Image (cartoon, rainbow, N blue to C red):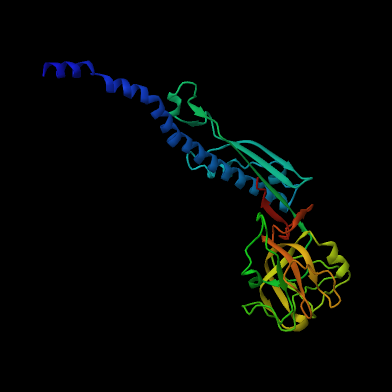
Length: 325
């Protein structure tokens, strides 16, 4: 019995030594779990503030590039309102470029930054970290991109998942002749095949009122809207207007464009004498009219447009949007 007690006496304090050895890694893990989490939370709030501030300035510039809110903006209150920790965020800089129609806002945590009491107990790590964020927005009037004036019913892509980023994308055929279109709400307009009213095989959709007039007929319409032009688009990604509603009949049909389908063209048949069909895609022969290729992704009406110089001048024509990193 004496021998056992004596052995135990010699091990007294071992747990304290072990705890001391483990204390530093425990504090390190605590710092990661708590302090780093706080840094990420602050970063997210600062980013929201920077984005909101950039949008505020872009809206002002979209209305008038000579207004005080555009040329000498003070969006600190907007940035701070998105910082729920202390309702204050420092604006480092606001850069407005009226030539490129872009505003960039940089923010950071106020004063000494975000404290991390656990991590600071580890040698070499300071008491606080200053967190930064940057947001950018652009404004301007929509200008035409590569948009084919052929509206397709939204349900035509129902069974075709987006192929963007897919290693071996699947080619599809999007037909627009009435005999093969899907029977879904908004897909059939009496006397309309989907060709939109145009003069140069292009179309501009007003983001504020996306109703577009159409023309009758199964073949392409408009000056220059022919096989030669479509042949030049093979291998390119174009925007196909996607509609979800229509009004009228015949020449009075208007389509409601809800978004665009980014589509990489590999072949087509828009006239009876066409010879540009893709043999590697679903066939389009006889009375078939359609476009072959890859459905890449959906694009919103506003994002489908490039933005050009100009402002809304009080008309609401300007578009304002964030520039994502």
